[in-house]
Image (cartoon, rainbow, N blue to C red):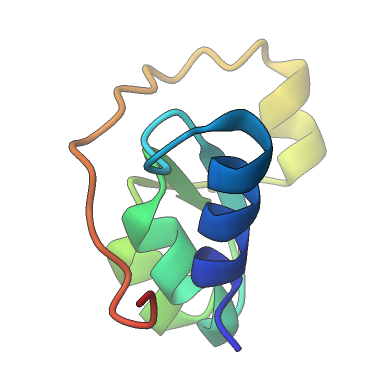
Length: 88
């Protein structure tokens, strides 16, 4: 199963959000690649799988805790909606 398709269905059903453009997603594994590519902002962890990192908007260089404690100083500009290939 695909995290992106499941999350998209949940957001649409629960909040009537038709896309993931307002979502900030964090991930590090190959199974996160689709989600990081289709979220409005996809953030790959510092030691992320190359497949996940390539589709992410940003890749951390330090820990997630350090990133969050820094006050999210990195400019997080959402990208246009992308479609998950697993979503029907």
